[in-house]
Length: 464
Image (cartoon, rainbow, N blue to C red):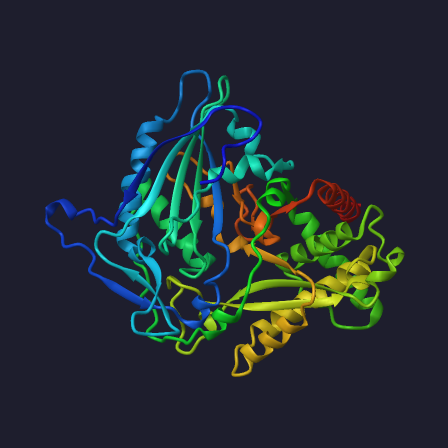
């Protein structure tokens, strides 16, 4: 587990349990889930060496005045009991990744009776929930200890519940969930979280779709290398959230359409997600340029390209179609690329360039044909600098993950500090249809200040 949080206070691990799959009828002699080996597909295996996805849900549990509205011990007990029942539905998440016995170059997600998920309970009395559940920049070092590292041996899921007990402040709960990406993609993992929360709050679980029967060779995994981020660099970053309102998103569409009309061309596809990516990508590029954010003043950037990488769901594009509730990875990759000078250009021209590049990447990523993976390899070879990537989606409805003690006050994907991605979610105003979108991003203090200034300028311009 990560080191204790900075800035004082007592952080302590209370206990660690192993939660095994268990059905509601287990006490009546129900047979346990039998041993199962699920071969990894190519779409799974490509994530074998990727960092796990670390997400924290912040909940308010009481009023801080001694009259807590939710008994913490009861809440923790419910979380453990419902996790066991959710794992009965999603039993592969209690298993482990391993090389397929007798196969030199294949991997599988293996489950056998007795496998379980690590569930750690911790307490921290040095920070209040409202200090962490904020959009303002916070040190990653204060949040990272709220997620559990995956245990050795190929585990794919770990959970940590940290009770926030700062005196004279509302009680809070930070629920950290760590998932190995090779086990499932974001759609699958959030489906698991919604199922767990539904069971915990008294609703029925929904069944997991059966895994595919296909397997795939994974020799490319052996030749890839990855550089682990320096922990000191990660901890020194700030994590902040930026929100685009419905009015902001509509203004982006209007301004992009105006540029297209001026140029006499068709406007690019400009959905709420495309518009959000465009603004954040622009600000990210400009923040990387220096204090002035002026690409024209940076001769070394001329001729260089900016890259944005994001996922597209392939479930509906497979033949035969993959079920929506499929547990595993079923995502492809979209590559957006454009000259930095175009993306960082001020005004509507820069927005148009970003939206056009992203829309083209979406169109290509949705064209799943026999040349799909060849195109992905070609795009990967073109990326010479570390790209901005995307984690999460507004479609995942993370603010609807209610375990029976209210909607989350805040949801963070902490692992973006390690991967350099931006996290994306629906806004907290009940607008899960993409009307309002929030983005989390982790940067060094200096770059965060430049990013905030660029974003503030863009929002003021969009609102004018």
